[in-house]
Length: 237
Image 1 (spheres, rainbow, N blue to C red):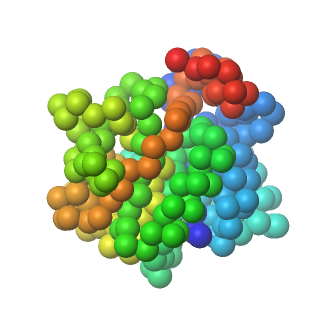
Image 2: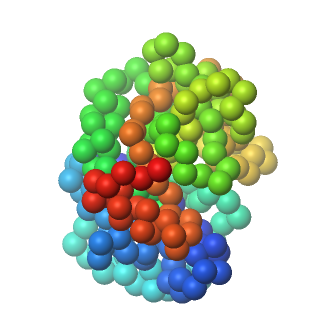
């Protein structure tokens, strides 16, 4: 499996709250977010791990260069205006990419759930995309995910107009058609990840939702403790 990590954000909310390192270098129980993701990917048969960093994160770039000496980490260095543009640059770095699991750097989940998620995607070759969803809403601007009785994704909405329990968890498994849609979307002026996902539905791609019990986003300093409690098995509301 190929993996990709969006690590090009500025982490502006964390910076305003006094955290001076790039967001991917936030530590949970002594392990950086970026290192945790790479470790999980390696334990889930990573052939290649592409990471995009911005041009203002030399510490993060140096850290990743060190990892790349012994691990299949490939670094794309480019400042981008949005997460979707970061995905575009990642995928552009490998024109032959046909299957990938993509995540943002601040997405915290349980490893055993992630492994089951990857296994499900790898075994179901009919899927053109599989998205992690959760009923645990931890986002300031959640993207709601409507599904049918078979968990096929029917819609992505900014409000819960479909009365769905699920929101997007920020982990995406994509095959060739969905990967190609990134290029088309960006070149047609689409600038948000959620609008790209809507385009996948509009194009009729076969997308399924895969429920995780909880996925925690680290956007604020207070989220660090929340994520650590979650990983320790304590109840997080």
